[in-house]
Length: 357
Image (cartoon, rainbow, N blue to C red; front, side, top):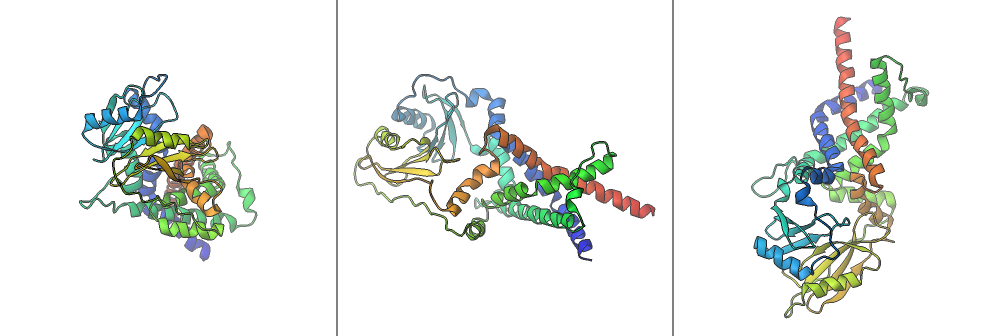
């Protein structure tokens, strides 16, 4: 009786969430190599000719603000010398900047780019109401949770019969229907853990408090909260060049990835990536009243919960192991599409067989 109920639940969950899961998985697959696709579609807008040295930061700031009429909020530097720097402005637009010449290559809104459209669809289904809220984002998390439940039910149904391991086989010479069934079970079981973790890591971006509680419970530790110092302007600020140089002088072997400018305060911050980090979570803060470093935070050697929480983004997108994990994640992201379609095929076949009998 329980098996029958769970089979029905397995089918119903797949049917209810099928369209949404297909949308999430296909858009997620595009995002795995989203930046590379975007650059390939319009290389002149995203790539530059490398030169020996970039312009001074103050010169770059002057060129951007002169061209856009808006102040800079953040600059994202690039590891590759032939990539344009991304500059985000206070008016919520962005520009691609040639750091060697100061040329503003492209002035745009993030939501108008290829990557931006796919990302907004993947996370929020594009819709934003008049209050600037994204009400549909909850459906993305619900679909992710349903995928986890679906996988767990599938695992139980696989474990219930005797000798479940013998069912994990693929006979490539079998008839197409049998082969499809074997692939459905075997791939679903083998890939169940990474799929659950990918779905859960996606939920962390919307259900932060709940997922943090899960991480802290499972790791028996707490998540370190990073708070920026509060620095008010007391007089003329030092030049951005001096503040920038202070950050560079205090990298301690890290790579500067993002530079955030003072906004209604006197604080410049640099988000840096240490050698043992997969993503830039470490910070450097400079008081622009004096140009001195006032605080720094290294995200390594933190609690297990903090390390797990900080790892969630690179894990979700599969970028932590280079092209190997990105290709693997591309396959994993598309796997639920195969499972949904193949499961639907078996259901239709059973229904037709039942009518004939």
